[in-house]
Length: 60
Image (cartoon, rainbow, N blue to C red; front, side, top):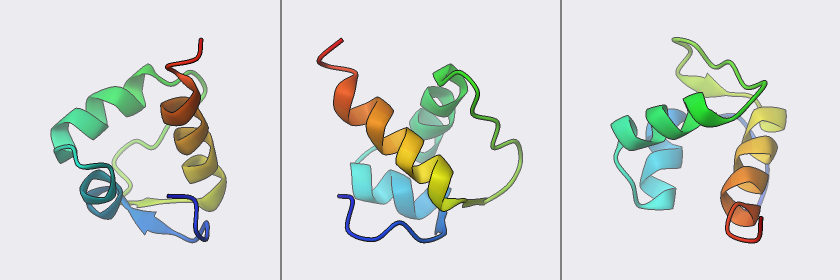
């Protein structure tokens, strides 16, 4: 999942994670300090944060 952190659209990320764009949008709102707003493209540092949150949320 963490092949190369380049700019990625929210639609691509949702497809990669196997969830709908609406579900992704709701989950992104739950991540503290992440404000993607109405932008379609996510920055690499935001993707890293999202991957960390999704991968390690089961451990916490």
